[in-house]
Amino acid sequence: MNKPKVEKKSATSDGIAGLTVALVNIPEGMAYSLVAKINPIYGLYAGIIPPIMAGLFASSAFMVVTFTNEMALMTMTLMGEMGEEVSIGVLFMFTIMIGLWQILFGFLKLGTFMRFVSQSVMTGFVTGLALLVILGQVGEITGSHSEYQNKVLAVVDILVRPGSWDMPTLIAGITMIVLIVALLKTPLRKIALISALVITSILVYVANWNTVHLVGEITDINASLPLPTLPEIASIPDLIVPSLATAILGIAVSAGVAQYYLNPDGNRADPNRDFIGLGAANAVGGIFQSAPSCGSLSRTAVVVSAGAKTRMANIFSGIIMAIAIITIIPLANMIPMPALAALLIYVGFETINEQRILRGWKTHLIGRIAMIFTFVMTLTVNIINAFMWGILISLALYIYQSSLNAHVKELIPLEGDHFKEQEPPKEFPSNQVTVLTVYGSQYFASVETMRKKLPSAENLKNAAVIFVDREMTEISNTLITWIQDYSKRMQASGNRLIMAEINPKVKAQLVEAKALKIIGEENVFVSEPKIGVSIVDAIAEANDWLKKR
Image (cartoon, rainbow, N blue to C red; front, side, top):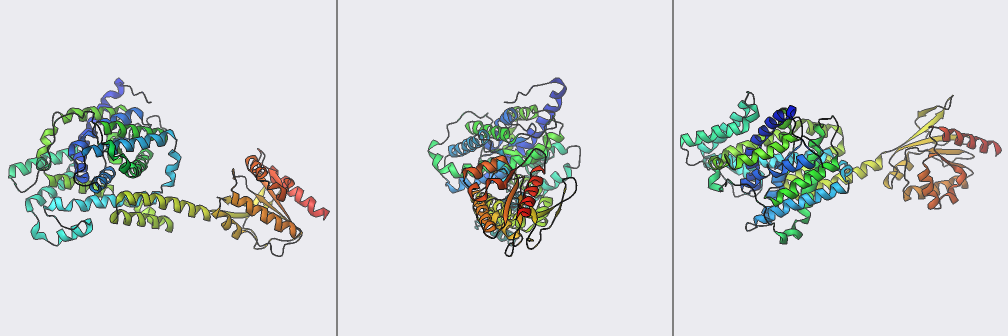
């Protein structure tokens, strides 16, 4: 556990940063609650316990953990599938289970496995989520609604019926967007979102636009601090898969946030400790009526730009949010719904990262396919299933790319025990020694790729072939079988296969598999601390063998 300390030299900076991010958490917490279709108070509660717990337990000092767009859409999907009569205790159980999964991942040290969720998949998924948020607010900002369930069809239906729009509602929404953009260019930029909400709310009140729906008409926000609440235990079986998917998503998003910002000591965060911090934020947050949380890139940027010096900034933000809830939050009932919708549209466009999309598009075909597939899936199917499909696509792409990532080069001996690397010949030359080195993965599928890249041995006579592989630390059963078969064919035609620079662990595996009975123990040269020694020894042995024939 981290031990945050309040120090005089950083307390003021951390306090201001905590206040700033708390002021941003108020409108965004309410707006994302609108997306999730839950009482805004639960989104606001996510600004109290989660940042405090992350500040105490997470490795990343500046990462702000709270209710986000990703968590809101996952929550909306879950609560929608469970029906209108679903108990709010299901939400709290969902949040707690997300946290327990994340704590488990942290203790199992599964941080390294996050690299199997490709950036292309995450880009497609997050872009799809952002577009869903934008499309979902068109009805709120125009005051018109559609009977279509599909968000794309609903937006088209609304746009082709301008006569159904409520002009005061539309004006309030447009005013909110204009105010956000304008205020972000002024000294008030750090409180631009909440300032725009206040001004828009005053405008609607003064203009007496009765057709504009207010937050208080949808639900009542009570000025009370969150108390421990018993979750819906009976819902656990139904929440296992959704909570697992959401836990992985929260980890993936948070890992991306942590990569952007170094800790005060200049080091990167430990992903496994971040998992535990994130899990504590959700597990404890769920007990105290919080919506699911994960790292927020936008609000982390806010806390850093506001001058945060230590992790105390996040703890201060949670305390300040608690104070705000019992003082100013009751006024939130007067906030116009189109203003929150406009805020979500603005945040949605800000979430779309054009550079990552272009990079994913231009890098390689496989990444492009993964990004497009996940994007389309996010827009067309249940987003929990879409994310799980994205993970499967990531794993499939990793396996496929690994299978292609086997390269063969020929090593030509030079003076002083040095070697020159070049492309291998199309056919092995007879009556001499050929040294080949292999790069890349050599597990199951990639063995076939390596085999196809080897020179032909069809007419090979009286020759020695040396395979060099210093990188291999483990050998697959597929590769062992192939080496045995290849060695047999070489021996049958009067040739010899030798292995050099072999890791001692790999040789032990070959012994255990009884493969050396076929390959020959004299044909395996173990690597030495000095690179190349075993290659030189293997070449000398091969040349002596050729001279004796």
